[in-house]
Image (tube, rainbow, N blue to C red; front, side, top):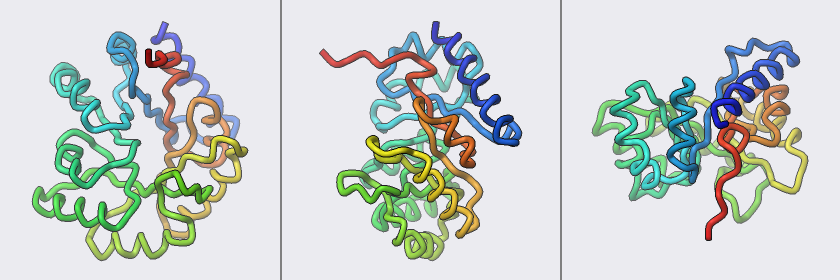
Length: 221
């Protein structure tokens, strides 16, 4: 069943792109596999999906270290908060960090990147709703934060956001796009299962889709 969902989402992404006068090739699916049963993930892998998003470093290690041996072209993206003490482990596993959101984390990543001589793709998470309980750089603080990242020789590829759950997402997607354009950033990670078509219409270059691909996650007992 998960394979059918996966193809349905690919078809819906392509349709949303065409409807927005965009090329489907310009919008990428990140299949959010966090907390999904291994059999569902394997089904989607076997259907051809190779880009996955995970929220936690430890959970991703447990799931993906063996699977990456079997499917070496897997690309993993960290889409959840990153603690500074997990930076080394994250850079060992992930091809992209989408949740760079504070100077201390930027400094730790820069230190590790310099030691390795290689860097993952980096996106800055923006708290477009300025919600106190949510991670992310406030829109008004973004310019200064990007300047600090630049001073650390961190190359930022784009922006990521999670709009407030109780507000229409379109204004938040529009704000993220405006911020990206202002700072010359090409990539926009925005849109999830419930609103990815809207995000694509607003310029998303990647959408993070979980339940629409895999089915609803099982509720904890």
